[in-house]
Length: 568
Image (cartoon, rainbow, N blue to C red):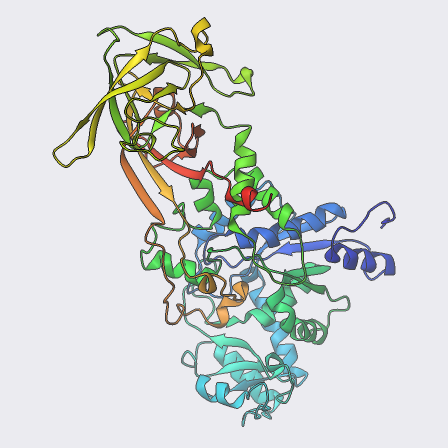
């Protein structure tokens, strides 16, 4: 394959080009191998982009493979959801595979290892195996069953497959080196007994291969050239190579590790995400606070922003933590040019204009986007009564408060300059209504519009105001250290229990629901998934929970760009 016209942009591409130049491989084939026990999150997308991106750059192919060897947590709904997520990101896989399709062949390869004296059936309990595996400073102890004959091991393994033994009573282990400094090489388990209904094979099998056996073998079966994985699998690489080489494959894949994605105050451990879903700490996998793609899509994140974010993060060899504000900045960049503008008052205060005639209506043309006249305009109405946001008024404002206050003037966006003449308070001393006058000569677009005031506010008239609900989101996690817990995601079949001692400090303000909001008719009547910039507030997306009587909007990101400000 010709490579002289290409230039490697990261260390993975350097390895790939080295392999092509040396003749180790004459093509490139990668794979994306999720376990269907949950939905993809933003951390998976980094691996996904690398897998598909490398294949595309070198004219190769990328397969989608579901490593479905742990039926207790796997489901067809996750298979279908993962495929939708990949398609939403714009990727197309060359071949679709399931580990379960290869169960018969994997079983026969395990039998071949037994015949070669490289695998044996162990009767030790899980606790005995754990103790005898040793520590980082102490070698392991050989199992008393390690020297069983090939014939006895073949017989026991077949009887394991036939369901003659209880769950957990026996395992098949690779026979490697119990004194290896790499603990993973100390006779790892490659098959276990687990009676559990499988979402594709039903009850055909009661033994299932372990990830460190199935994964490398299936890579080799599919003809994968480069097995790209996150950094926590670096220690697995000797075992990966051992499995492929001893299974008799002449051209083993090359495993290359890269740094996983870590984001501030963002939990990217699938075990923890699943725990939060199953314990109703969130509304589901598509909760807009979740870092899952279904959650981000529901919240309103554009796919272009996700690709931009991952391109900015890049590919590295060492783990680091990315500021979550960078992702928000990418979202703003994507929406700033595409999202139409609109009026929404999230915490309304009623305003009455003393010098505006009852029943008089002024039609005002509002641009849908200041930089894109082709996006058109819509009509709003100015009447005797309107609403402004409570955050835009103060009874006793500080010196640099350029919004509305008693005796002060502001301009209502696209309309008139108004002046606060009086304030009505309720019995608790809260602002109940503002009494204002209108400068009738200051209509936007008129000759009198040149008069300048320091503040411009968004607003809605009582004629245009439609009731709505707004949901404001912040990070789920308060504890930064807990958020960065790492795990070998695809190896969860080794330990599929819930995270022990889940004591992550959740953010009590991760969801704030505002039920008394007002939006303009064009926003209220939009379709679920449509996105807008609520002027001076943020970017919002209509949620599927909306009804004709009560539209619901998710805040995608606020307008304030903390990342850009911090990185000037």
